[in-house]
Image (cartoon, rainbow, N blue to C red; front, top):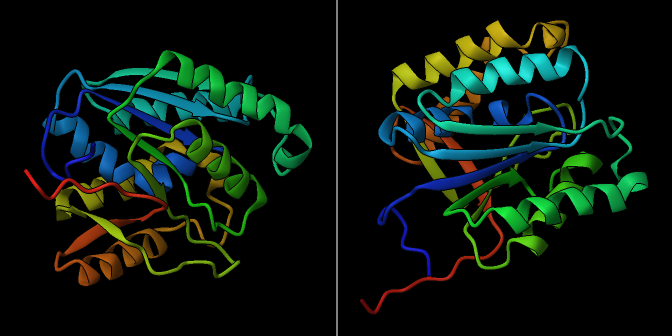
Length: 215
C-alpha cells in the first residue's frame, strides 16, 4: 500500500530506454531524493548505449545525479529506436531487474510517450512492477506529446539549476540537438512548477495508484 509523502524510502528503481532519459525526465527528483536520504539504493537499467561513450556519460551523470546513493547501473546494448524488434531481450532485462529488486518507487517512461522505445519500456515496467508506485517521467521533444500529468515533485531553484547544469556537463554527445538546451529544460520545469504551486517541478504520469485513506 502506497502512502504518498510518508513512509521510509530506502530503495528505488529507475529505467530508461536511452542514456540521458532518466536524467532528463527525473534528474531533479533523483537529486532531491538522494540529498534527503543518504545511502538510498538506486538500481538503474538503461536498454541502449552500452559499451561506448554513451555508457561512460551515463555512469558519470547518474553518479552526479545520485550523490551519496548506493548506485547500481546496468547499460545494455539494444539498438536505439529498435526496441519493438528486441522485445524479448528487453522483457528479460526488466524481469531480471524485478527479480532482484523490490523498490519503494519506480521511475520509468510514460506509457503514452510518442517514442516507441520509451512507450514499449513503460509497458514492460508496469507489467513487471504491478504492486509498486510507478511514476512515468516526461521528456520534451518534437513529437509534441506532453500531456496533463497527475503527480508533481517540486524542485527548489537550486535543484532545478543543478539539474540543468549536470545535463549540460555530462552529455556532450547530445549538445548538437536543437531541443537540448537550458531554456527547454528549465522552461518545462517552470511550467510544471506553476501547475503545482511551486517555482519549479518535475511532473509524472501515474497509471495506477492505490490509496489508503482509512488509517
